[in-house]
Length: 83
Image (cartoon, rainbow, N blue to C red; front, side, top):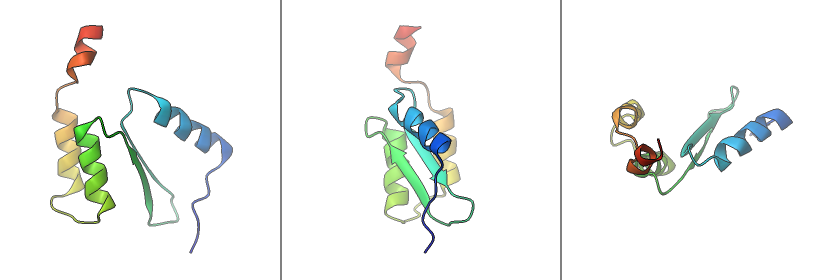
């Protein structure tokens, strides 16, 4: 089985994304592999639901529907007060 090979700049970009408070879901797939790496923040219910659904490999509804619901969801209330 081929392991995921991530170069230095890719690792740096992933680390920056995961440390950001504005990013709650990161999914990475190597071109040559079928495995997908997913990291999610449990404080974001939508991102965490997407992570759990794909972590268990049970497809209750298509991922496209979950992502579409996340896209149309309103921003978090604390973000509105900061602007």
